[in-house]
Length: 258
Image 1 (cartoon, one colour):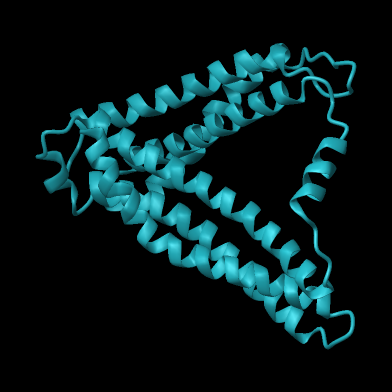
Image 2 (cartoon, one colour; image 1 turned 90 degrees about the vertical axis):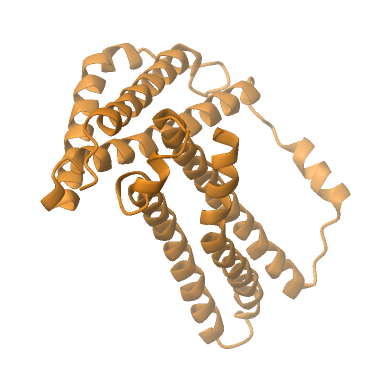
């Protein structure tokens, strides 16, 4: 059933974000073309392109957060909740559906941001007339002097980053669900709940900070994340689970759709 929910939820956000991604890519390419040409021509176009690129990037990041909040609030706590909660689907599946979809679109947004940076470079290369073949790119890659165990560090940072995204999503969901317990001041209560959640997490973090500060340095000059990866990852999972069960409990026991 979770898969069926995702088939509906993921495209629902995509219909609003994909056109913005396309516009972002176009402005990135335009920025690259105008930035290179600005050395010999007026800088007016590069300023306009940069403003458009920044504006669209800001809109996309803000829209992503707004959609994450709206999709959860409206579907499970608001106007659409009557319909969704009579479906033969568990509360856990509903929450998991929203969280997975939100995580996917956050990762897609980050990926598109990286791709727009590449498009800016491609635009600059087109104007300059310089061509960089695939063979040259491979040669440059192999000439990079990567530190020892770089692959392991990259994997650990990637896992922790994804875990942090999931934890942040669950923080938002928990705050919204707690705030819904005050029907007359839902928004204010949600903001207050989020602040309290951050205070709670910071307090727990300070209690365990001495353990995380025991970091060794490898011979390659990079921090040896092996000592902190497991406890940090466990803490991230633990916080995510706490927020998940807060949402689940309140939605099962204290949900008021009146």
